[in-house]
Structures are given as structure tokens and as C-alpha cells.
Amino acid sequence: MDGGSEDPERPRSFREDYRRLHVPRGYRGGRHLFFTFGLGSVALVACLLQLEHVQPLEWLAVPLTALYANLAEYFGHRGPMHHRRRGLGLVFERHTRQHHRFFTAAAMPVDTLQDLRAVLFPPILMAFFLAAFALPVGWLLAVLVSANVAWLFGATSLGYFLNYEFLHLAYHLPPRYAVARWPIVGRLKGLHERHHDPRLMTHYNFNISYPLGDWLFRTLR
Image (cartoon, rainbow, N blue to C red; front, side, top):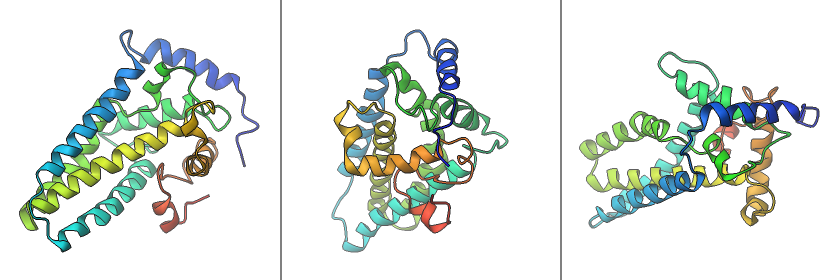
């Protein structure tokens, strides 16, 4: 299955409605980019600056956090982003009812920078995932293991999130942008494009970055 048989008029019509109803008058895609990558980078560096005399075993926090983040990405996407859950309706609305109608397998690229509103995480969802996945674990690590491990967890989580946003943005850029033509981006974009087929989106390719979770749980297509 692929998206070749999709009606291109459907996403075009939805995009016009989305821009009218969901993009604030003062929204600027460039500012959204700066907020995501600028603030995220500052927070990452702030975490790294807290490290003191890191012990060899403490560095294990980096690969273990990357694994945790990959699985959180997988289950967050497979679960509330595609299935309505009580208290998480905004996540479902933003992802399934907006993002997946704005972008289909036959219409993946943005048209203008203003369309980044439909790609990048809005601040409120960034706060949700931070509160749900990062802060509780970071606090427990500081109490049960060490402050260094907690700060490494925070830095790696932020790095993973920025990498996630970078790749997802690259998948939805037009081919004229060099990053959209990078070989690794093209390969991962193929997986994400299949996920954007409405017939496949609730069954396959839930990892938006690296398909480890999909491989582990046999949802890789």
C-alpha cells in the first residue's frame, strides 16, 4: 500500500481550513523554529554545565536514556497520539485530526514556513511530554542514583527531542532543501511517509526518529 491513490484535493482543502482556523494571526514559523531549537539547546547546555567529576558508570545514563526516549516516542505515538485517551484529547486532536490530515503520504511537504505550525510541537505539548516523561524520571534518578546521572538524563532527553524535531521537520520539507535530500533522511522519511498513509497510520511505523521500537514490537513496515 502507498499513498499514490489519495485525492490531492483533500489535504489541500484541509490546509486552507487549518491555516484559517488554527494558525494565529501573529504566528511566525521562524520564531517557532527559534523557540524549539534555541531554547532547547540552551537547556541542554545548562544540564551539561551542572556535571561534576562524572564517573565511568554514570556515562551509561546516555545510552539508557536514548533507549528510554525512543520507547517513550514509540508508545506515546502508538497510544494517545493515535487513540483518544481521557485527559489527553489535545494530543490526539493535534496529531491524528490535524497533522495527519494536513500531511498525507501523497502530500508530505510544507508549502510555507507558516505550515511549521502543523509540524513542530507547540509549547503546551512540549510541556506535557516534559512533565510526563522527563521530570519524574530525572527527580528519581537524582534521589536514587546521583545528580550527575539526573543531569545526563536531562541533557540526553533534550538532545533526543531536538534530534526528533529536526528529523520530523526534514521529512516535511520540500526537496529543494539540502537536508531533505540527505540519504539517512530519505530512508527514514520513507518509513514516516508510509505511516502517513491513512490505511497504515494506526498500525505501523510509530517511531518518528529511529525505528528501534517498531523493530522490537514488530510494527516496522
